[in-house]
Image (cartoon, rainbow, N blue to C red; front, side, top):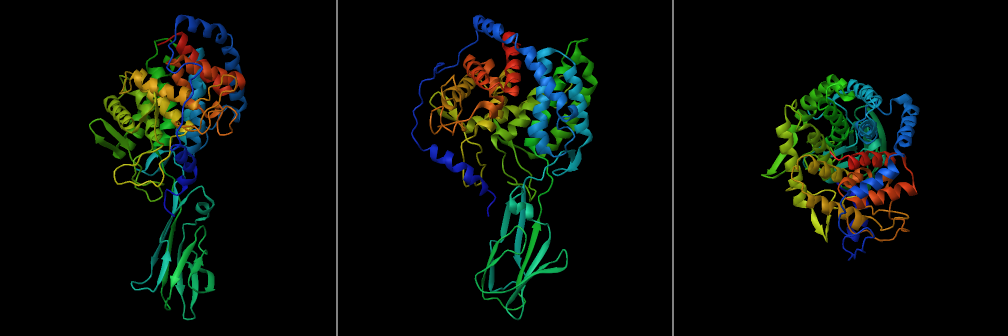
Length: 500
């Protein structure tokens, strides 16, 4: 099994759809972004000013009732911290910016301090941080002799850690040897015990090694055989998880270190300086060896070469390097940032790398989940999905609002048109969204292939730029008053009615 086989199933639909001619219908909100005017701000103020206290109260009740107010901060798995805890931390920062109430900052530092206390040393670089064993288990078979008459196929298996096969891998070493009676004897060398003896007839399916399936063919002689080494997935740190975890922490650092003296956030500057030291000395320096300058205006991080990485040594997926890019965006202009200039350069080259791979789709954009680097081969290259693309959208919006960083207003226009003109089904009554950023299968709000906005994530950040996004997300919230979307809209409202 090759390391990329698991991408095939999820990519087939998108790959086929990309070949189907698709005519976009006219959007009921218009085909181009709509600017915010004083009248539109007043309209938003009239409806949202009175909603916000109830939204904050609901979030406070949820927080106090969930895990005794600790959320997921006592977990050590970086995947849980990245996809769950980091989102909660981001909500605290939203709630603080909406209310100015230091209650949210106090909860924030309590949880982040707990997370930092739970760090351990994991590869790569054996640096302090959080790891997750979600790569691959590797199983490698090698002949015991140079001139064997039997063949083991395949000689290498790379099994997803979260698959049934990957979970079954033991990390033991085995030998499968033919005896003088043409029997195949399989021994677990780690535990010094025979686990199978069976008569051999070519071809023979060997399944005795947990989690694996091999085919042995040929006319073996006594004494020949194979050594089978298994390696369980290692606890690895990742750019993706570090980026997701550190972004809200960077937002806290930014808020505290730029706060006016005497304001609530200014009281947390000691915490902020300690977190900044962690972000620069641990996180930034840890990933610098994996940065690649690909051209004068393009760059990306690579996966480590650890054998249990899913894609060892490959360039990262677009949304993955962008998670860390958002952290650098929040830190790069702080006077106390030691590496701000380098962070800004990293972000500039990330945007350059992404824009080399994006392609026009009428007045919108289309892009892939991942584009291979030179010499890298992916069996399937699929269109980016809605959920991961939300990270891309957030990065690009933040890059534009934070001094440009290579992202223009025309770029935001194409991004917003992707969301409104391509992905949205055009209904304000029951808004649904395509699962990919290009060529949805059916532009019909009744289609089960379309999704509600609950998985939409940070697409809401485009509402500051485009009133159409505000309108359709407000419609999505009215149809299904989701707590998280309500907080997103409340936060966005504060940025719209009082633009920075």
